[in-house]
Image (tube, rainbow, N blue to C red; front, side, top):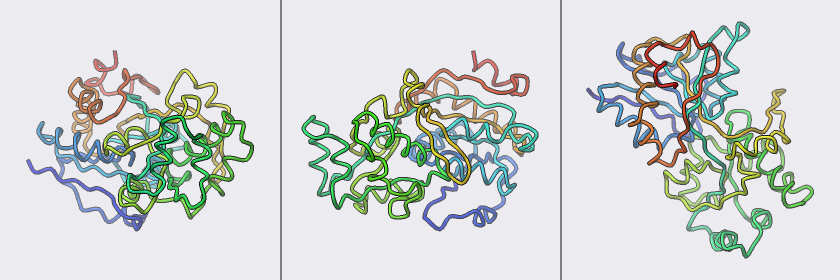
Length: 317
């Protein structure tokens, strides 16, 4: 079976464009997923699903942007994969049309500072890795072109703000986050989730806040953040919870970076969705994720246990 895939690329992608997607075959499975998983999905998961006879149409964007599309009725995916469980939780309940009744967490990641090998600042980040320079000083180097995603549309965007606040706290560097980022939605730094990696690889940026998932999958050099600031250690959850940001009236609180998935109530191909989720949560799916740099965790269910499809319940032990 030919695998038909749709990958959203370019800054011109918009809510209006989402309504122009081609009609899908009745047997195809529409998957909307966190843009940070684009390499994992495109190079590993979707091809492997096709080998199992699953006709997957997958599109990656910022998780918040995807949730907004689902909430507005512009998209009705069979599966939604988010980089933050809270985004899926925001689709639950009668006030949200009961678009989601449950979700499963299945992996974690952490924030890193990816940098372009061709950047004139690359040697500086090597010095940071060797312990010869403080990361906070390197990030404030004059002329450094820093990239990040929109905190209103993407969990990585608001997690970048959390990480900067946590680095400020760790370093005892008052005002560091504001100096580094400027406004929360600083247009000089913000790029679409779908293009950030390409801009970094192409040399348009010197450095960017990325997930380790992304830097590993694309083999980009990266500087690790301390566990107290990388949002990747569940044991640091209380520390992460000490930072927050409010964007467009929505307050986000620091928490570990966790991937979650669900089958929305608006899914048109429920059986296909179950088959795809079963694959993701299977041993084969876990091995593919792990080889792609994703830190796999035991599947954990949240929401209405009775609403989860019977076929998936054995995978949640």
